[in-house]
Amino acid sequence: MNLKVLGLSLLLFEVSCFTEFEITVPRDTVTGFYSEELILPCTFPVDSSWDLRSTVITWQRGLDVIHSFYYSQDQLDRQDQRYVNRTSLFNQEVAQGNASLKLDKVTLQDAGVYSCSVSTNTGSQKKSFGVKIAAFYSEPRLQFSLLTDGVNLLVTSDGGYPSPTLQWLMENSDITNQTQTHLMQDTHTGLYVVSSWINLTEITNSSLTFILHNKPLGQDIRREIQLYSDEPKDVTSSCSMGSKSGLSDPTILLLIAIKISTSPCFSSLSSSVSFTVLI
Image 1 (cartoon, helix red, strand yellow):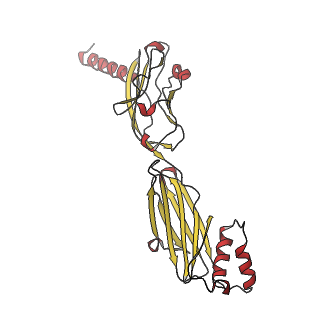
Image 2 (image 1 turned 90 degrees about the horizontal axis):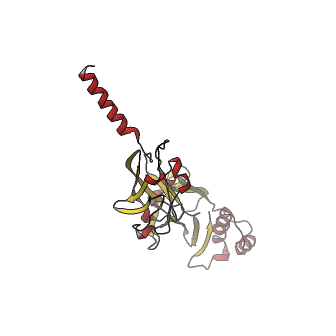
Image 3 (image 1 turned 30 degrees about the vertical axis):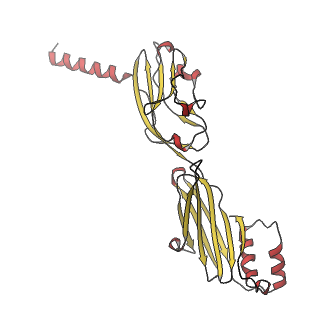
């Protein structure tokens, strides 16, 4: 046999042996949901010669050991304290090549780069991938304050992460630059509370749209607020409706609130009247 051909054959054989053992982890960053469980996928090849006793599975975040498995069982003596009682493997599926890790009660501090290392009698490899944590924002709450010269609209939503993108529309026009937004981060959880408000001095029959976008989770909250400034025909009736409780429709509440603010019932009002409802 030609020496060049022999050398090429040996090289191909060595490459084939080197790439035969290949573990699989996500190519893209994995997104976890705050306070829920997160599965970190990792699989490895298993053939007829595979031996459980020679299998070592190690999950790390940087130099910190998150979970170890060898001698056919979990080995948690070196586990980082932040992960105590929060991690587990699918032990009954290790024989099928499943080295995935389940992480419970996910927090924002769990974001980072994770490594899965698998070593068996047929080969070994280590691969890494990123993890980010996100949280859904709550159903927004609308607070409208009736002033002597107009109305103040305040929309609040909390419990979300990361910081959202907000937009306000009036009819088809973007009026975001006329609004003010405040972000506050909870000192304990790290989750955001977002408040956005606008002052309107001239109330016209129009529609406002509040939009909150949480990109990592694809969460889009879009709520419409109808504004009316018609003078009520029956002042007594409008005042009576405004005093009723149990009205759940935010559009009706806002309509009634703005109407009664223009009636003699509130002619002596010098401060503001506020209502808070879900939208």
